Image 1 (cartoon, one colour):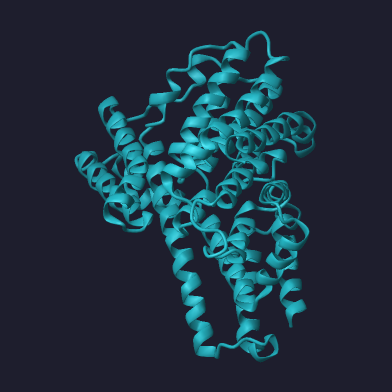
Image 2: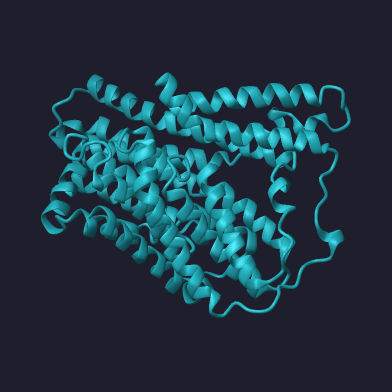
Length: 428
């Protein structure tokens, strides 16, 4: 039965990896994998040599579910806040200020803005917003794809040093493996290196000016007044930035802070549009919720539950023992995990590491956890399918897989290696 569980997980993961050829959303195999693993555990627990009885196993399931739910509700709240800002054209506060068409200047400007925004919001949302912005700033395919690659690298680098910048850092932060100020202090400079080295590489061939679309092609702000747009943007960014402060003051889980801020935004937007019967519907939070990527949330649920099942069955303990035997150095181990995250999703890799290594082995803020956040967050830039940001940009800009591998693999690898080297020099 041990082998059967592994086979189920591998087959489920293969279906996730081949989402596009199979034409089945990755949430479906993720949910099937998670539910099937736990069903097999409950049906054949005696063959797995588990000491718990079925009632105790259900308690273990609820334990894993509570941790997953905390992450999922945080993501749901954060995604709703971001969509609410976007519906009110709040991000135009930033994008309207980009006036240059010089390729080299745009390269650094886009990289810098993406880096900062991904740390404040999250790398997936930032990648989507910046990819959409690229279509307003340039028209030629080579420019769009090159700058799309920069957005992917910058978004993953920016998300790696912030506790709310990437799903994996959120998982480690909520799980207690890292704390807010420690991960910022230890990974900010390596993350900057991860961005700067690719930008230096790409700047060598960046010259001239991009061809910008006509002014009339740029979207307008619609019916939202400038005051409302700025207020919603400020409240939304304040909500996202205030989550760590809320957590440190109240000691409540992060999803409570994000939901508190969402409640304030909900109340404000409902009041400000109360007299606008014509446009009110599209600005309602109830309408915004239909734009949320619920499939991704269900995907994370399936993966996290599946990983919890492998932990309960003892598979992760065996894997941890094997890794410790063959790769005892935390730097080498996390480097391998980061490279693997370019091939498979980094969410289950980090979830597996959390299950394999209890806090008694590596206490909070240990080098292992901090470096895991850095490597899992930035290693996904090596391939376009290696991160949620990459998949999102690939969808928005229709970037070819092989084009990205030929053009962006080298600069992404330079950044990844440079980030690990900078971390080793600082904290090794």
